[in-house]
Image (cartoon, rainbow, N blue to C red; front, side, top):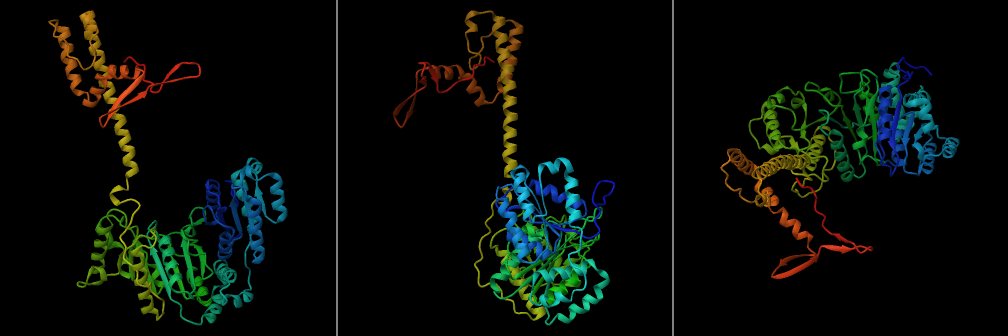
Amino acid sequence: MSATESGRYQAKHHIRIVTAASLFDGHDATINIMRRILQSSGAEVIHLGHNRSAAEIVNCAIQEDVQGIAITSYQGGHIEFFKYIYDLLKEAGSPIKIFGGGGGTILPSEIAELQAYGITRIYSPDDGRSMGLQGMINHLLSSCDFSTQEPPIDHLLPNVAKKDPKAIARLISVAENFPDLRDELKSTIQKLIKVSVPVLGITGTGGAGKSSLVDELVRRFLRVNENKHIAIISVDPSKRKSGGALLGDRIRMNAIHNPRVYMRSLATRQSNLALSKYVQDSIDICKAAGFDLIIVETSGIGQSDTEIVEHSDTSLYVMTSEYGAATQLEKIDMLDFADIIAINKFDKRGSLDALRDVRKQYRRNHMIWDGAEEDLPVLGTIAAQFNDSGMNRLYDRLMTIVNEKTKSDFKKIPAYEEKKVSLLLNADRVRYLAEISESHESYKTFVLRQTAIARQLYQLRGTIETLRKSDKAAQVPIFGSPIDPSDDPTIAGLIKLSEEMERQLDHECFSLLSGWDKTKARYKEATYKFQVRDKIIEQALFTKSLSGLDIPKVSLPRYKD
């Protein structure tokens, strides 16, 4: 095993790993730590998140052509889960290695059983202590440092036309990992392409919700086009420093678990670009496989990026309302080239203003000075909302454009009812948790301020009564009773200061303090009486203990200040 000075394993091949937490397992802290170390060690990580079934993990691993699967399992069903994953991979004829961990939930005897069954390695707490986190990752990477497919590729070609995900994935890997064979592979693949296949390119700023939007488009496509197949090529950036990449678009994909869908995640393997230089090879391979529609999703782009236009027949630009001042729109190149523009996360405050401004900019860019606003290809969407009307409109407009440009016959959504947007939180209440916190802090500040005033007022009244040295005056309640006039200038000054302090005290607080002695007296009585609709209700204030003691139901504080 070779390692750098920092202790990280130096791989000879591009290593791709699927990471996930097992089904019915919400503990994803560990797998998140592991996949971050994998990324920083140079691996391309396809992260699925938590609560993933064996079939989801295996199908993803085959489609992504990875060398290994890393799973954490803390839910107690690890024996059956890991064995089932191994059986599914064996059934598919895939030599993908399986790694796992589960802390103390996986016993040493169970680790031995799983590894004897065929699981590559289950890491135990003892391994963590002896090897360290980086040591375990180094072991995993060294075990996966091999090429999944070596030339020649002739045996893969017959299965490509059958839409075999394993063959498609292997060919894409060859295109990525053997650039010397690129021309030969391209020539071979071009011969397999029988019909023209439309390509929909989707690009946009990072965090605009492109993956969620793609998932909603795929869901609608599968529902209304019952016999059509779709391929998704998703690109995410590689880290310039480590070479690793987080290919995390599958986390947002819920509609792709369908035999009519193939998805492949690509790392750019270069910096400052939104697309992999092998994306066209991947598109051609999917065309050769006979998919009916290919979607290419780029990584987050800047204002000047328009790469996607060169690889697609129809392009969709996804943005949000958070682009800054309206003048920033003049700098976005994709507003010139996109066939349709989606302002996603339309539930955010300012989205209607953004829709107006983007439509104005679109008119300027395309010299459109008449026509209704609704006819412009600029739509508001909420991809995170089920059956969003904006997403329905976007899908229909997209299919219309694709059909016109490529002579396709994709169906649109049957007549649907325009529903009112139903948000979990209205735009003016998105800060409701912050408002609760602010209200709590404001109340605490109010209480502390009133407490300080009441304490000073109490001390002033006490000082006045002490200076008077009058037994009668000493019996006067501190709060709620006027102070007798006094000719003594010191006492007179204190009385004046006391009155000023009293005006600073909140009226409700003053009333509570003034009536405190009466309140204590009421709760010391045996019963508490109150009236409801002309009826007197009497409630006992004490209960008898087994020792015969009277225990008050309401215990009042005993402080004197």
